[in-house]
Structure formats: C-alpha cells, structure tokens
Image 1: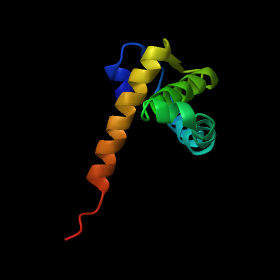
Image 2: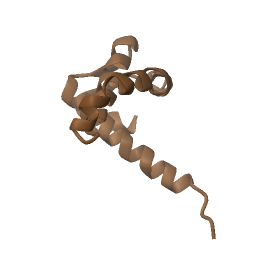
Image 3: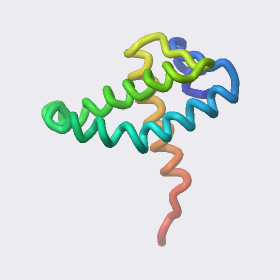
Length: 101
C-alpha cells in the first residue's frame, strides 16, 4: 500500500487486494523467479546483475495481470515499484535482524 501511495503509476483498490498482491509476489519470487534467473544467467552476468531488476518488474506485471484490484500503468512503473519494494525489504530485514554482541 505504501509503495502504491508513493508511485502515481501504481494503483491498489483496497487492503485485500494489497494482501493478495503481497502473497502472489511472494509465491512468484519463490517459484517463478529462480526459473527466470536460471534462464537469464548470461544476460545477468553481462549487465552485472541489473537484469534482475527487469525480472522483478516482469513478476510485478504478471501479478498485475492476475489481481483485479491492482494496476500498474507500465513497465517503468513496475521497475520503480520493484526498486522501492527492494529498499523497503532491505530496511525491514535490517530492522528485524537480531544484533549479536
């Protein structure tokens, strides 16, 4: 919901749609993403890993296709969505990580 609030090209109808989007992105990242990464290893190496952002954007567009209350206006908005989502995930994992002394 926060990412959709920040980006004018991403629209979420309600909290149930946002919950379904989060669930489908999680499942897609667990199932579809490893297959896509495996098939795109050469281009990922050539782009020094930046092609992984394209894979994330394609997954977001795929979720957009399946969820009624979620709309992304195009590839570039999906790419921006994936960048912001990556930053949020990084910050959240850093906050929740236990500190070892």
